[in-house]
Image (tube, rainbow, N blue to C red; front, side):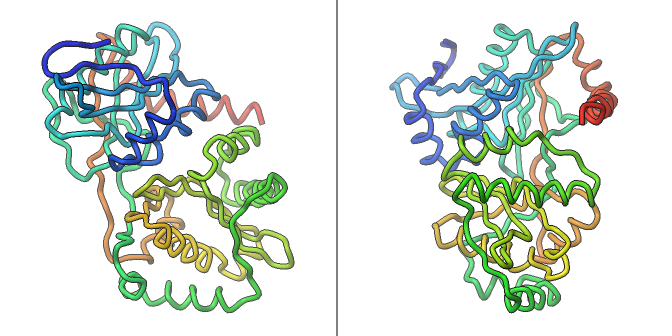
Amino acid sequence: MYNRGMIELQRCNDQEQWDDYALENGAHPLQLWGWGQLKGAHGWSVDRFLAYDHDERVVGGAQVLTRKLPMPLRAFSYIPRGPLGEEGSRDELLNALAENVKREYHAVVLSVEPDATEFVIPEGWIKSKNRVLPARTIILDLQKSESDLLTDMVKKTRQYIRKSAAEAIHIKQVRSQEELEMCLDVYRQTSERAKFGLHDDRYYKDVFNIMGDHSPIFAAYVDDQPIAFLWLAVSADTAFELYGGMNDLGQQLRANYALKWHAIRKCKEWGLSRYDFGGLIGEGVTTFKKGWTIDETELAGTFDKPLSSLYPVWSNGLPAAKTVVRKIKSLRK
């Protein structure tokens, strides 16, 4: 427990309490309980804290993920697309969280990637050289009408939506483990063609089972076989693209156009207000995504609270460390 200044920090171990607060306060899907539970099953430590003011009113919160690092760095702590709560309590909340991860995990740094385009850097924090999630993305305003969303697209995107929708494609939400397995087969084909790495199947099955309704999958089918899929994480306000792929027939029919438009319309129907394309990385995928709107979004970025004299080693060595990790993973496949 942290109790200094204007807030008292308390650990939250109740899923219903956490998600109720998160969903009522504009949380990104990566701040939901299920996302932390998923990460906790795959090598991360997960802590969720609520901040109370002197009137015992909740004024903020954050789900903090921590990963062990090789000695002497000890640990890396991270707040994905958070924190939550009132702007006036944010700096004190972040500093309290930094004290906690330094004390409990001896973390070399606490990194935060806010779900916002602007972020006033608290004293003692710095703009990071590194990132976990891309800051450059597309975020559609789902409060716009469908006709306005279509108008914002480039002409070719509208044409391909119509053409792919006219093919013998059936789009539906994935509900069963069997349907998930077929989508994962499409994902493996996509990975081989585009030459990117994947988690093992267990990870994706855990996303499906743990996140539940907060992580819908939509798939395009021909003759009862999926040719493309799109996997989201959703909160009360925001949809965030996690994964997606197509096989050769999906590419031929441009199924990703009809599929994405279906997902966007479904999220709008559910009452969500934002649809985040999950970042602009990779030339071909970026070109595809940029066709959906005239505007790009540049989120504030990544910010660090250095917690150790070894922080420069972490900050400067991270790109090289990521390369080593990728090489190690490739040897395990």
